[in-house]
Length: 327
Image 1 (cartoon, rainbow, N blue to C red):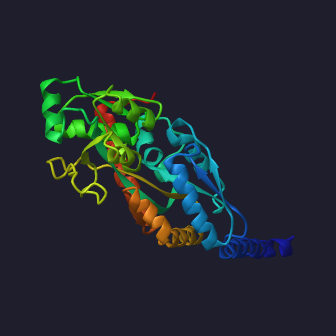
Image 2: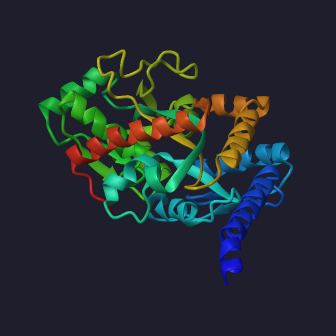
Image 3: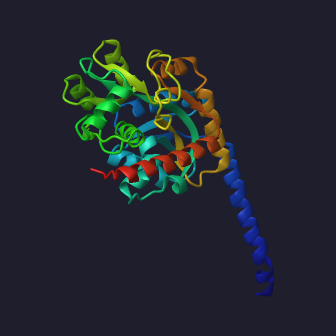
C-alpha cells in the first residue's frame, strides 16, 4: 500500500505530461482535418459572400477544406452562439459581425453568450461605411437641409432600415442624437426592401451600405448626401463625410471579422490570424473589397478585441439613449 501511494504522484505527473504533449502535438499539426466556418446570416447576403471568399483563400493557405455553414436567425445571435458553444479546438470558427458582437448584448439583454467572455477574436476582415441617401426628387441636398427640416417639423421626416438594431437604424439614431433632431424609423424585413421604398418616394431617407447603394447612385436613382467614414470615399469623391459637415461623432463602420470559441489555444488562434492576414493580401480579394467602398482589415487578435470592446461601449450607449427594443 505504501509502495502504491509513493508512486501515485509520479503516475499523475506522467499522465498530465502525456496529455500536455498530446495537446501540443495536436496544435503543432493543426489543421489536419476540415474546418467548419459558421456564418450567422443567410446565404446570398454580404456576410455570406465575404465569408465564402475569405474561407476559400484561407483553405488554400492552411491546406485543408473550410466548410461554410449558414446558421441565420435572431439578428445573428443563433450562429454567433453556436460558435461560442463549440469545442475550442480550432475546427469551428466563424464570422463575428457588428450587431451580434457589439450591439445585441445591450439590445436584447438576454443573450445566452457574451461576446467578450465566450468568444476569442482572430482577425478583423473589413470595415465598411454607410452612405445617407435620399430620393433624387427629394428637396434635401445637404445634411443641413435635413437637419433644418427635422428641427422645423420634429417627428415628420422618416428613415427606412432593414430591421431593428442594425447598422441602418443605428446610423440614423446616432445622427439624430448628435444633431438634436427627431425622426421616425420605418423598419423593413430587409435593407433592399427599405431601399426600394425610398426610391419609390415612400420614406425620406436611408443610411445604406456602400456596396448596396452604389448601383442606384450611379444610375441616378438615389442622391448621396454624406458618408459615415472619417474621410470621403474614393467611390464618392464629391460626397462629404459627416465629420466635414460638423458631426464627427456620426462615424459608423459596419465591420466583421473572424472569431473562435473562448479557450481555443493561442497557437491555433495565431495560425488562423496569420492565414487571415495572408488571405487579405490577395489582389483579387482586395480589389473586390475596395470596389465596394470597404476598408481592408487585418492586424492582430488584440487589435480586433480592442475594436469589439470600443464598439460595444459606443453602441450600447446609443441603444440605451434611443430606447431601442428588439422586434
